[in-house]
Length: 263
Ligand SMILES: O=P(O)(O)OC[C@@H](O)[C@@H](O)c1c[nH]c2ccccc12
Image (tube, rainbow, N blue to C red; front, side, top):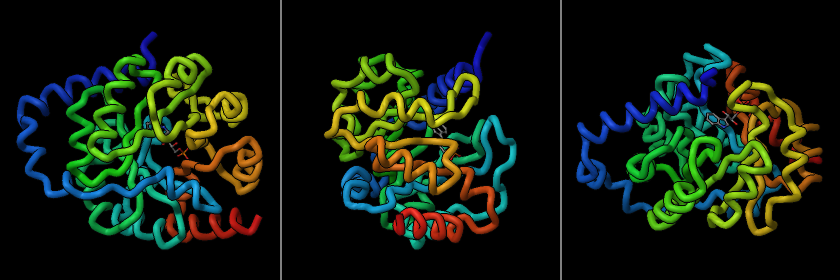
C-alpha cells in the first residue's frame, strides 16, 4: 500500500518538473539572496545551551490544522527573540500549507539560521532554497539514494548551505555516514505510519559520529524530553507542534527555552 510519504514524493516530482519548465535556473540566479553568506546552524548549536530549533508549521498530513492564522514573520521573529538557535520553515504547500514566500519573509525578518523544510528530490530545489534565504536544507534519507544524498550535499555545501540529513532507522544512517553532512537528525516520527517515539533517537545516537551535530526531531513536548535526550549526546531539538499549537508560539518557545537552560 502507498504510504503518505510515497504520495508526497509523487506529487513533489510533478511539482518540481512543472516548475523547472516554467522557471529555469537563470530565473533563480537573479535572486540577490544567492550572494549572502549563510548562518551556520551547526556552529550555533555547538555554542548553545538550549539547542532548540523552532518550527513554523501551519498544518501537516497528520494534523489538518495546527495554527493557520499567525503570520510567519511574527512567529519566527518571536522564536528568535525567545533565544532559539534557528527556525525551520515548511515550504511544502500541498501537504503542509507552507511556501517559499514564507521562507523569504522569515529571512527578511530574522538574522539567525533558517532551515528549508521540504521534500528535496532535485538539485533545482537546493538552488531555490538558497535563492529564498535558507541557510540549511533538509535531506530525507527515506526518499533519496546514498548517491543522491552525496551529490545534493556537495551542491549545497558549494552554495554555502549546511545539510541536515534526516534518518529514521539504522540502515538509513549507516549507508549515508560518508556523505559529509554537518547535521544528522533522527526523526522520532515514522513518516510512513506517523507513530512517534523518542526511542529511535536513543537507539541511533551512539552510531552518529561525534563530529556531526546530533538533532532529535518531532514529538518533543516537555523539557524532560530534552534533558533526557541530551544525555544521549543530542545538541539540537527540532520542535514544531508544541509551540505552534499555542496562541503565541514565540512566548511558548521562550518559556520552554528558559527552562531547558536552567537545567
Ligand atoms: O511538530 P513536531 O512533532 O514537533 O515536529 C517538527 C518536525 O520535526 C517535523 O515537522 C518534521 C520532521 N521531519 C519532517 C519532514 C518533512 C516535514 C516535516 C517534518
